[in-house]
Length: 595
Image (cartoon, rainbow, N blue to C red):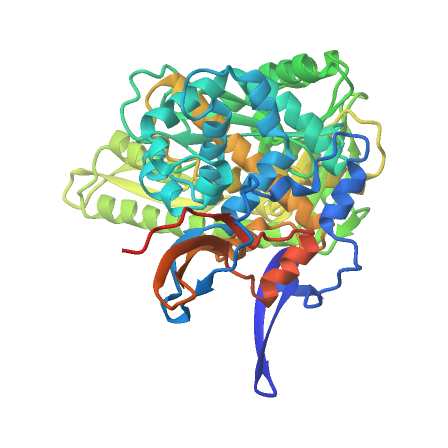
């Protein structure tokens, strides 16, 4: 669910309010439905901060000033006379989004953790502060370290919130901050598991595991993990690394591992399971993985360790259960989706057949497209043979093989025959004929929209088992958020350690993102933070310049007060729901003598 802002004019007055909207699937495609309107400000209503505070009772609950900047000194009580005509606003800076992100950083206790673990050296900016700048930059405006130092940081109000001058934030310090942060990866993961679990009552029995890739710009000669492999980013021309991510059913990250770019997905399972057990103990857990992770060795490995699994299976395995596809004992789990349980060949496993109406329509359209391409290609082959341009049978088979490779979904739809015949002029020619494969057509009609799951759980409700597996989409959304919203790709770093640290910063930013999403959920604001972050980014800070005069009318000193713009009505609704209060003033700057 996500937020949508509405504006309406009534009786000559403009009204702005929020609505909570969700995307739903219907027989006519994806539609959006309004769940609730959030237009009222009701301070008596329990807000998100109150609910989080109750969950954190006796669990290191943070103070209410979690989001406040460092205290500033109040001015003297002397009354200053201000020349109204000279009042102006200068040096506008981004405030709302960085203020929110810094509050999330402190809410997760990352400032305290890194202060305890990172050595205090002689540097002007402490390493925990550098780590926060890197993470906040990735959360608010993902870009390079050069962009952070030259453009983003000087444009924000972090100078006031962190007390670090912009000239002290430069690329060398940011790169060194990456190097200082990386050794604490495991400690950070353990801390976040505990902290996020306390905040949101997370359960870790059902773990979702998926893998993705992110590519590099450059040769990456200093990174042995940078290899060319199957690219999920459609960049096979670039070297890449693979990232395996373990998340909960709510998409909260539990940990991740980085593998070489040419690593096969199924070979990562054992190492990831062992890492999770080493970090968090060897307990009974249910692993949910897609078919790319499945191998008999992996499933045996999990069973031998006392674990359970629900996994997808290769499409070819569906043929073993062809007889069950025509039966009528299906159970509808939601609109357009049906499932059934099927006993496996071995008693220790159960198979779940599922079929989806939307997936069937999609696969039907894909098959039809490949069929048309295959038929057009065969016609071109036939025409080349008839005109004498194609004479060699071996060359004809090579061209047929390439045609099947490009249209692999319909490669078995035609039975093609290539043979030599005598031409009208006595010279040998080729005859290319084909017929439709009825067996393939029957299987296509029967299997479209169907897929097969397998599990060693003793659960007998197919709907519950299917819902466990479908939560794997949370892991897929985690990668989508990390790639699109937090811009983990492309990676510009060339050294292995810097690449690892870059991925760690993206992981931390994703933790802030999911913490905000969960906070929004308990506040009744949905679970899509992008719109909320964009709204908060419209809240600015600036210097209010106040020229003064003496009591006899002569020009006096000029005062500068760094203030925060007042949120509009719609932004106040969001702040009220979250239980936050925007500070009105950040600090008083030094007086400037009037010349």
